[in-house]
Every structure is written in C-alpha cells, then in structure tokens.
Length: 309
Image (cartoon, rainbow, N blue to C red):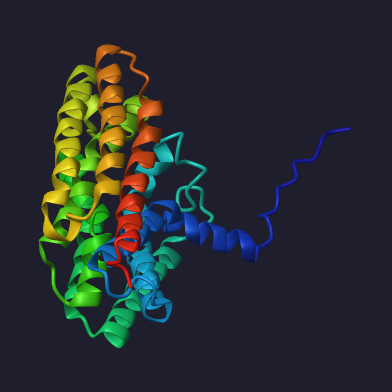
C-alpha cells in the first residue's frame, strides 16, 4: 500500500503566541534596557522619580519608541536574519509568523503611541524629536545604510541604543543638559565592546549573511584590540562621571564603578590575550551586568542622598 502525502496544515492562530511574537519584534529585552536607563535619568534629575502617576506615560513612551525602531530593523533585515542560524527561527519575520504589513503597522502604531504620550502628558516636542531620531536613525541610517557597508556601524549605530536617558530627560525637563549627554555617552561607549564580544562568537553567521562586522572584515586580533581600547575609554569615563555636579554625590556609584570597571578591563585583557579563539561570551554577559549595575547605582545614590523625590 502506497503512503499518501498529506500536507501539514498551518498551526491555528494563537493569541498568546502572536503577542509573544510582537514582543520579539520589539526586541523587548533590549527595549527594557532603554526603559531602565531612561528611569535612571529621571532619578538623577531628581524631581519625579517616585511619582508613578507622572512616570507611567514616559515608561510606555520609552518602550514603544524602542519597539518601533526594532520592528523596522527586523523588517529591513529579514533576509539577512533568514540566513543566520541564530535568528532564522527565533525572529517572527524570517520564520513567517508575522508578515510585512503587520510589522509596518506595529512599528507605526508604537511610534504614534510614543509621540502622543510625550505631547499629551509632557508637552515636550524635544522628547518627540528624540524619539523620532531614535527610530529614523536605527531603522534607516544604521540598518539600511551603515550596517551593510561599514564595520564602524557598530560604533556609530550605538546612538539609538543610548537615547533612553535623552528621551526621558527631555520629557521631564524639556532640555538636554550635560548630565543627559553624560548618561548617553556611557551607553554609547559601552556598546562597541558589548556587540563585538557577541560578533566574535557569531563571526561565521555574520559572514554568511554578508554583514561586515569587525571580526569578519578585520579579523579577531583587530576586534579584541578595539574592544580593549573602548573598554579603557568607557571605564575612564564612568569613573570621571562624579565630576559633573548632578553626580558629585555618587560615592556609592563611584565605588561600584571602580569594581565593575576593573572586572570589565580584566575580561577585555583576557579576550585579547587568548585570541584567536577568545572566550568572549563571559565578557558579553558581564557587559550586561556592568551596565545594569552602573545605572542601578546611580538610582540608589539619587534616593540615598535625597535627590530623587
């Protein structure tokens, strides 16, 4: 008896699964980092850190701004994501679980929500500009222009990921003083070694997708050297942060920054010394802890020393 070929039906629509895919489209873990760093800026500002009624629209605006940018990024990179083992099934566009029209509508809706909240609750066109710059820069300048052509896109592309404190400060103060720029720079300088640590691990995947990441076009030696250079600059800047008046109270922050910075640099040295097969994933994981604890220390300082009210 001959076997009959039976077509496998498409799985039925699942609302929880669809909502989870929307969260994946938003890169919700990365987006929550922007929310957290944005809240740290509010705490450093020192006026509304405990006013949840005032802050909830800002938290949503920060999340929806990131979601909009990340959705467009995945939309434009869906073919490259389909060529990479890490993203082929994990992301909803290359796997076909979400379509192009849905992704575009989701991105526009998220940006619209962010703009509406920033204007309705804070009346800040400056926050709106920061949100729009975040989305346009990440989706169009970084994803479509820089990333397919230049390895230095990892450095320049750090701008959108560092915009959380800028958006938050602009919303609550309608200004961007040096303190907001300082928080921006911490994230901006942190991004290259964080991304390159993962890029070394995924070097073959990036090469297969035609993405000219630094390990692909310059090799492991050049990448680990650049990671060490940026690590030194980052740690030096984080230790100098208390020289700015809003951070001058930060002895808790400074103590933790010293410890975290020493560990960060130690891992950068280990990665550089142990090339061409360096253990980059422990450094990659530590970079996440490093950034989270630095900004947590700023929040704790603000509360301990009475700036956050």
